Amino acid sequence: CTMSRRCEISNKRYNNANRVSHSNIKTKHRQQPNLQWKRFWLPEEKRWVRLRVSTKVMKTITKYGLMATIKRYGADASLIRK
Image 1 (cartoon, rainbow, N blue to C red):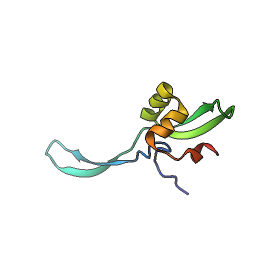
Image 2: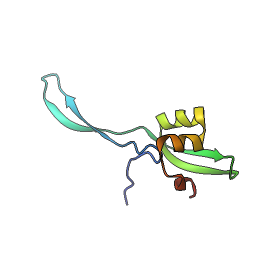
Image 3: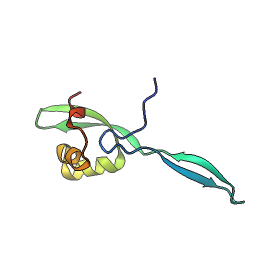
């Protein structure tokens, strides 16, 4: 069972790109997002929530908080009910 490499909050996923050689030959390649497993403290429920998020979203959560970030990205709040 493989898991999709997708941020749980922003739904950020891979980008299709080209590798370009010295002779300018282009070959398809995927640029994966920098996803990390991270625990976040939910003060409203006094518990930890484990999410797989991109590092960009981690910075946003640090700045605005978890619930504000979920609202900002329009993510479903039910993902923290795990």
